[in-house]
Amino acid sequence: MMATTAMTTTVTTTATTTPRADAPARLPTLLDSRRLVVKIGSALLVDSTTGQIRREWLDALADDVAACRKRGQEVVIVTSGAVACGREHLGLVGRPLRLEEKQAAAATGQIRLAAAYQETLARYGLTVAQVLVTLEDTEERRRHLNGRATIDTLLKLGAIPVINENDTVATSEIRFGDNDRLAARVAQMISADTLVLLSDIDGLYTADPRKDPEAKHIPVVQELTSDIENMAGEPPPGYSSGGMVTKIVAARVALAAGCRMVIAKGKRMNPLAALEQRPENGGALCTWFLPAAEPSSARKAWIGGNLNAAGSLTVDAGALKALANGASLLPAGVRAVDGDFDRGDVVVVKAPDGREVARGLTAYAADDARRIAGRKSHEIEEILGYRGRDEMIHRDDLVVR
Image (cartoon, rainbow, N blue to C red; front, side, top):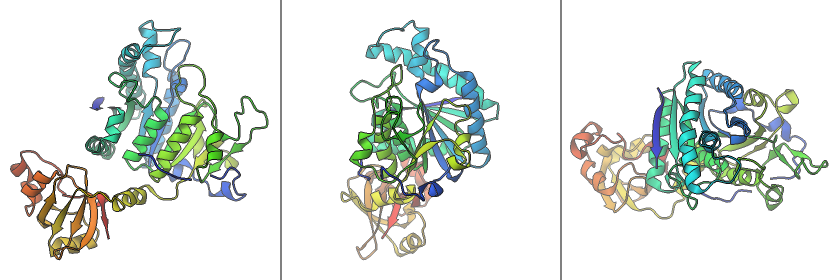
């Protein structure tokens, strides 16, 4: 059964426009991924003439996703196409759409997209879960954490989250505007290690290869510079709202989160399978953007470097020892709660003598944290009236000094 969940950060990284001679041998492949986000554009998924979903192509993509799942990889799909699919059924063709018409088209098209994904992945016994996201879900900390928890849970349960921007409620002022950036924000949110942008072009070139026959393909980008940004051209015509410009913006977000990104041509059948080998070994031509850090270390670097801690938790000697051994911080080990903070805020963890020993993202707001401090995890529901996390700060959200 299709489950539907509606869930109503920029950085500086730095690429060599001329890769080193040994770069291709060092490039990753899709097989190196543990958790990957795959972005699918409207132009790939929906025929712009008929408004129909390209089922043969989608079935081939589903074959690839099933192969990824079989070898133990977690897959999240970020899909465009709701507006492109829905507008045909509402007779909204041949002209630009007003915002309310886009929202109506999205409402019609989204249900058709969801059904198509569910049907094709059901051939492999895979469960699909639809998740609709707005920009505020990635910007507002509590929504960000809720979204992360929902997607993490779906992946642990073996489902394939299919994510799209919630066009039916997003406005022109707050919407992502394209799903390249949405995919990067999702990859950032869930600490994915690989972001795949399936495009109408097989990577980044020194110029637009459709206009300049001298344009050279760039296989690897290790540093985002102004030269790299200047290589991006104009968005392609048609229903797609993306283009190389938005892909470079997506790369900034992904690399900052420690997530590598690849731009590859999606129009071929089985586009993910084509990324399982390097180009010199028969794989697809593509461009890899490589981060300086892994997802977990990039996330923890952000937590540990946050200067605006909203409060503090003082722990006992037993909890202090457990933290040193890599454990999560449980409510039972907390002796004092100071400050006024919300769930998801960065808080300082202090030793009994007042020393700062860690920083982390608290799973509870200050008032609730005070009520469960010193209590066992199985008592949380009785005390608060709801069952939250067993941990005050999960080890994945904790940086020990």
